[in-house]
Image 1 (spheres, helix red, strand yellow):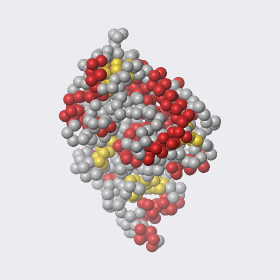
Image 2 (tube, one colour; image 1 turned 135 degrees about the horizontal axis):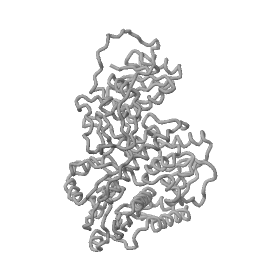
Image 3 (cartoon, rainbow, N blue to C red; image 1 turned 30 degrees about the horizontal axis):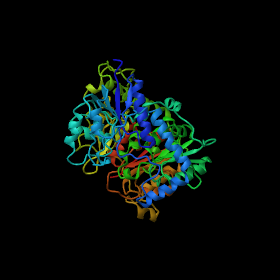
Image 4 (spheres, one colour; image 1 turned 180 degrees about the horizontal axis):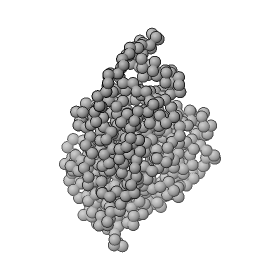
Length: 587
């Protein structure tokens, strides 16, 4: 590579927001670690960091009053962000205020990178249109994209052709979310990889080197709260965690309202101090994606929640997508299967998956920056179905998986949505997505799929059950009139559930959540069985239930109640019929 080869990064960096600053730093540092000098181009729009707002509303006036009361700390925060921008980000001295200024500047870059964050979201710009600057349209340099986001499930009407024109000059495309991959598939007809958020390209050790303590660093272990949305779902957990752990509560400035009256608020943290607070925390409560990401990087016990705007479809949230890959969705509050505060986290499995995902994303970035170099082989795992469903490792893939056809799953008409394929996929390459009628159907991420065929091997629709002798038939009902009144089966399910719970077992069945959606959830106490009684008449969202059942079966008796196809899917996911599993089919 020639010595004068330089890259220019187009991303959001200027706004004094921890996630924006840290993702910009991670992208720049990751590109430079590959051997390509990288400048962040000093271009931004509609981003005002002024400490005081224009007093044109009651909310702005209230914010200004708060700023006056805490001015010294907030001024330090302002200065620390500016210092991070100049020092770590090394943003160019010359600012560019418009597309025309960029076009006339004749910038000296052989490569332009459209970086992470919502730079391709048309609705955040003043004219609610794409900004061509973030597509590098001011230059004839080669262009690549690393993890840009549309921030939308679909494009506004009439914008696809414009997007298609902008994308024609890109040699390599990737996105941050599966919804972005769907948008690009519609515009280009091609599948593009979904890569990691840039902050996850760096290791915990690398981030720790850049951390700095805040002015008033907490003494001893503490519970860290970082909320960028109103913490409605997490508020009860602040008190629970404080009472259970007996640690003080430290709140990092994200929202101006205190999470609890006894919380110690840190208002002066810049990006480096943000990293240090997560590094030193004993427990984390957050509803921020980057708060979740740094909790995972530093392997901190944590609970998270999706944003209020995402609660109608939480599976599309970035935090859910990340934790689904890592097998940690039980750390999400509000989905009906939240872990207890003291529940252990399998960091070994999560770390291995994150390591593999990091290698894949860095491999994409290297091949995009240096396309003439021979692609490096990324360590991969090939899985084959076996009765125990345990992975068989192979050091290096002998064939590029992307050259092989995707596995063929059951057709839309035959698929029952049992999730056996998605739950059993060792690489998290299958997501269950709703179709137009609201039923969940598997979608394979071609970039992550290694073509092992595990999903097809466990699909009940592709492997019908063999005929069996007619079973013995019994009739039963509960003697409790209250249980019979609340049940649809005469209370037979409740009787089975009580039997299991009395023996220290665990019950998995469907219940309505707070949003009137039906989800499979876990029950540990008889007093909670009322939630599981009665018919629901809609498809239940299994989420990560199969994985949870497999874990509990290692030590305890389990009752799983579901439709016959869900039960069959569970058996095929497990690979056998454990003696301590009782399955209850609902006809």
